[in-house]
Image (cartoon, rainbow, N blue to C red):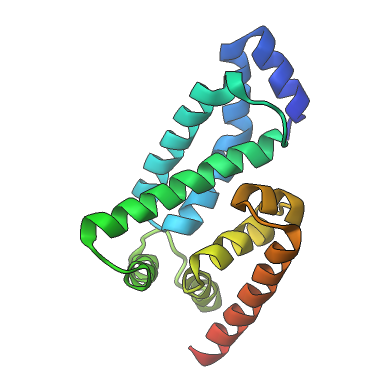
Length: 179
């Protein structure tokens, strides 16, 4: 991945080229982060597009009080949560019902390799986690962010993020063993 400072420097010299470089570096990881939260390819594409619109509109105001990666994942997380909240309000469903819907989408997705049963079970286990634990787990396990970055994104403490990650791992193990 290109150095964040280099992206910001190129952006300050040539915003169009800098934003293209930013997109080249972050579009795929952000898409997969969003996709792990929402399951649906179409929903993930829509939300990812909205993430990059917000990044484009806000990049001039980026204050650098966090890393560029942390800032981008903060925007992505807010967009995911906004989408989930909107979905709950539109369909008048509980968070638990929405979780069940996401697991159902996972099992019906054409993008899932059903030959790997353990992988599907693992994804279902992650989707069954409470929202905050699911976010922490995905940011740590898949996106390999450190607890400090996750705490900044989710507005908590690194210690709380470690606890959420630990609980998430335990619940995933339990889910896999019992399902």
